[in-house]
Image (cartoon, rainbow, N blue to C red):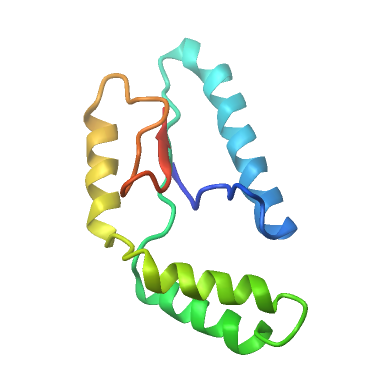
Length: 120
C-alpha cells in the first residue's frame, strides 16, 4: 500500500507533479507485474487533510513566496486551505482499513467529498 498526496490537476509545480505522477506510474506497472501472483497494489491518494503540517506548509508558502513569482499560487493555496474545511486524518485511516479489508478495492474511491482517491 502506498499513501501519498494526489497528483494535482491542473498541475501547479513541476517538482511535486513529476514525482507524484512517477509514483502513480510505478504503482500501475507494479500492479500489472505482480497481480498474477495474487499480490495487490493499493494506492491511496487522499488529497488535502487537516493536519498541523498542512497549516504550517500553507503559512510558510505564503510567508516565503507571497511576494515573489509564486505569490499568486501561494495565495490560492492559502485561500483553499482556509475555505475548504479539509477532513481530519481519521477519514484517511478509515479508508485504509476499508481498502485492506476489501477483496477488490475500487479503482477510484472518492476521499473527503471528491478530494483524492483510492486505487487498487
